[in-house]
Picture 1 (cartoon, each protein chain N blue to C red):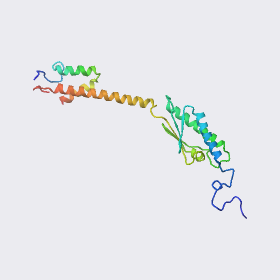
Picture 2: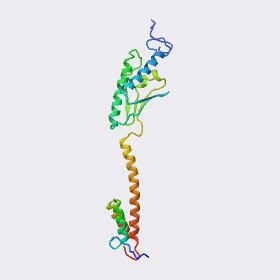
Picture 3: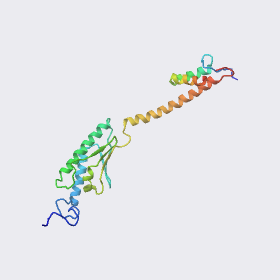
Picture 4: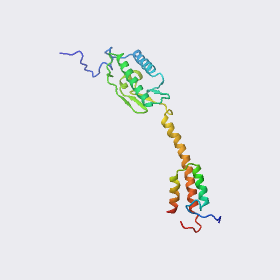
Length: 42
Length: 175
């Protein structure tokens, strides 16, 4: 275990924060990011 | 009373060659062919004429920005030289006073030339004017955008999967 926890909050989930920063650098639409997160939560 | 003009053999004078005014010699055919080429060349200087065995094909419209206008221009010019060809042969038994030009974005098929061309190129009954491929501005944009969108879609898909995985790493965390 690497000690990271999941979750939709990037402050509590550093890996998600990293992926979001990568997505932001690629000009990924915010709607796509929200859809991906919501899909997991559902 | 016998009518001299009434032919009892079933031929019409064109086929049997009894009427010299309506019969076209080889010289006339060559003149018509030459006239056709000259008219096309004069009216469409940007066009390359490929004389094939069975048909005339006009290609290479050039890099016109407005292809629709080019098509209309070509249509008008072809219509004019069809009339010109008909006017040079007043005794021609073929009626080409009402040429029908069927056109769409890429092709121009002149059915009226069926009247002219049998005398010029034998069995040909249509003139096909086709534009050269690869000179469409919007098609070029479409193809370039397709590639760009494909690359972007792959990047976004990778990011989405990464986000999906990052959120899903629960380790006991309730989602």
